[in-house]
Structures are given as C-alpha cells and as structure tokens.
Image 1 (cartoon, one colour):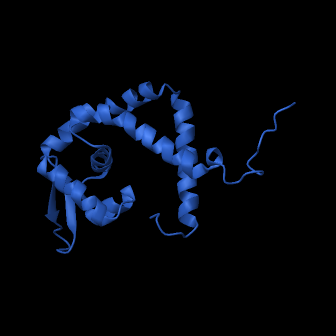
Image 2 (cartoon, rainbow, N blue to C red):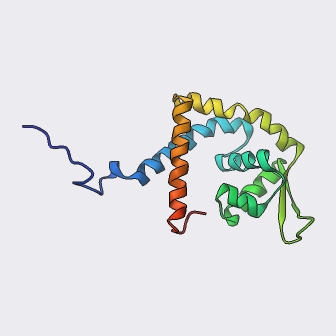
Image 3 (tube, rainbow, N blue to C red):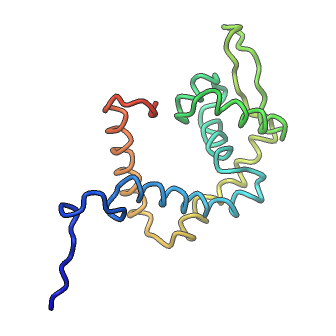
Length: 157
C-alpha cells in the first residue's frame, strides 16, 4: 500500500510547514554559532550588532541606533550600558540637542573592529555554506522583513 503524503494544504498547521518555526529555529541556530566566535571578543550577539552599527556609523544618536538595529530604546539601553562599562563606547549628551544621547566608540572599541574582521569568515566556515547562497538568503530575509513591516502589524520597526 502506498503511503499518503500529507501536504501543507491537507494540514496547514503542520509545524514543519510553518515559516515562523523555520525562522525561529534558524535564528537560534545561527546565533548559537556566533557565541564561541564572539566570546574571545568579550561580546554577546546583541552587543556585536551594536558594535557593527557603530563601526559603520558612529557617532550616532541612541534614537537612530535603535532604528538601525530595530530595537526598542528600552532594550538597547542595557546593551549600551554594558558596552560602556567594558570601555568600548561612551554616551554623551548631544551638543545640538540636550535631550538626545550620542553614542561614540572609544579607542578600545575602534580597535576591537580589527579582531571582529575574523567573525564573518568564521561563521561562513561554521555554516559550511557557499557565500553566494548566504547572500541570496540574506536578500530573501530582507524581503520578508520588509513585507512584515509593510503589513503594518506592530512588533516590527
């Protein structure tokens, strides 16, 4: 007797067919690969994302950094405090707007960038995937993020 394969149409609630499940597991799995690579730098994955933004755009306001990282300021603030305590950045009142905090790297934070240059190739190696394949995945995920934002549903910035 031939086995009947249940399709997504037959069972739209099948766990293995859920985009949200695949994204959640992929995110946890990939972030897990970063942990041992970032540990020697003294960074967690969220802190690494903050540093990436600062290496590219510093100085930047907390508000703008929050937008870049798509994090609420209340989530970003503890990350900045820990990075400041580690001597990697400083937060100062903006010279042009006393209500705004500007975030800038310290010399130690700028120097850490040289060590961080080893992170992307280490992750590519750990994943064992072709760079072109990863760039295609990145483009597709960026489209998913944009589509979620355009839906107007809260939870995305």
